[in-house]
Image (cartoon, rainbow, N blue to C red; front, side, top):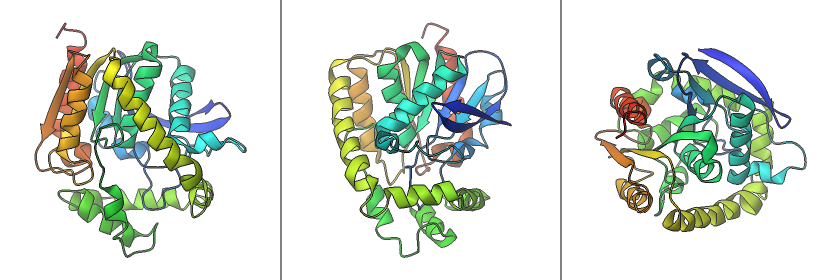
Length: 296
């Protein structure tokens, strides 16, 4: 994989690239800016990018304030919200200039790519949403897990505790996954983000209220407005944070106006389906990508 950097509205943005040819496939990770419990980044997809990138240009980007991408600029409070993450991602796609793209979003990255498809369909060739309780109607269970974590945030012990509940087989995450995230969390700019979003900070004042309003707006729009691109919903049957019922509700909502939508459910996998069942994930994704051009 090749690591590259690009200036997006003054924010130094990092992304990984592998393969070449065809419409680019862009992966967007989950997590939350200023989250001390995990170091989500483009590296989350490191094990599958070379496989998807056989015959296709495949890209994974660090969202604003996450991974190695810079934090929002001074005075840009919206940059710390999900709306700011969407804005930065759209600007990243524009700056690359390789669209339209096949977008693949996992967890909160699923919200980013779905909102991008609604706002800028000209940038999108197809849409894949994976285990995203942010974009699906219903109640998520993330907080119920995090509140029970007895270990200090940002420690290996805290990550191991979370993995026991997020994964069907926690050993999958233990295989090299913790070290990279601990390295990411140790960066000064991530520590700054944690302070900015922490107690009494922007998480409560801007991020959570904005996300609540934005989700309601998203569901209202999907109720009456089609996603005008082919959609694949990929869901893990055993996901404890985004129950399968939420995936079914998302399918029901999207399929009201978009006939080219399908849902692929994989058994014996937790929240990170692409890690626990990579071959099933890749097979379903490639079928979806190929189907964009065969008329199905």
